[in-house]
Image 1 (cartoon, rainbow, N blue to C red):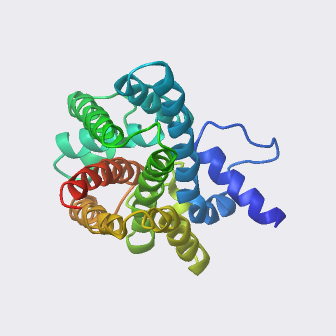
Image 2: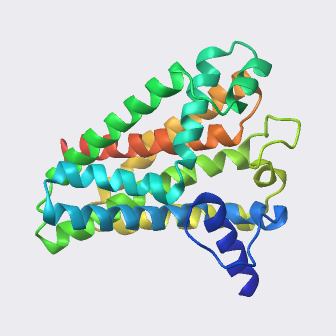
Length: 265
């Protein structure tokens, strides 16, 4: 149990800005095992964003509350995945060879492709989240639980989609310059089962409201499949930035899928 707690806190320290016990460090072995708890980080981020949304929704308009919830998500994670998304936009937008793409993604400066991509990403998040919360009566307790589960499911499922690429593809960089490389070194069935269990549980609970919510698995994992294939084509695998980009894109696809489902159920 003590070791599992250490592994969990390693995941919490690596993927968020939430304070952890002082004895937790970036141990490569624990960091590799921490992939099983990546979707649990989605539980935490989803719960935090829901809490911030709930608070500001009582004080201001739902649209402003959505913006504050997005800010909370960025602050909790340190824009970890958004940064990866921007780097992927720059790398694949400006590079035409594997070497050039990897060099551009390694550059800490954001370029035109990255800036444009992040702006469009946030616009999509804002609009889809606003549509989702406006679809329900937030004063109703059942609706509040529904929105909480939607927030948590979006973050956990998108993280599952991202980390699953580690289980099926090779790490692209040959050197050890990336802090994400320990995640790619080794994994066991515990990481695979743990990731899928924690990633799917919120959605399964959500399905008690309407079983059709399970259908979002199709577009989310189709998106994951095509992104992974795209990365494989250009850089023979993936990098940490690719995982961050996958998480962000799959999160937005989740929101879009929920809105589309509501039009037919």
